[in-house]
Image (tube, rainbow, N blue to C red; front, top):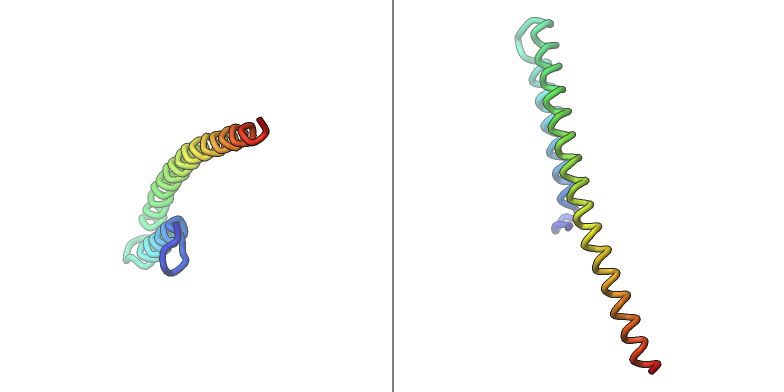
Length: 91
């Protein structure tokens, strides 16, 4: 569903997510600490983001499958209704 600016909810979410990742990465790199500590924090942060993105992808797949099932059922119902109406006019 698109809002008034023409961007869908998925685009807005993805932009927000990417902005957060870039901002957090910049904060880690600019923080006053040793290289070893910074690398460890980046590694932990990357693992955390990987898990969150993986969860989001799984939720997206589940959402898509739900909608695909509903859409398939609606198409099938429409085809049956069409066939029934067609039979009424023929017979």
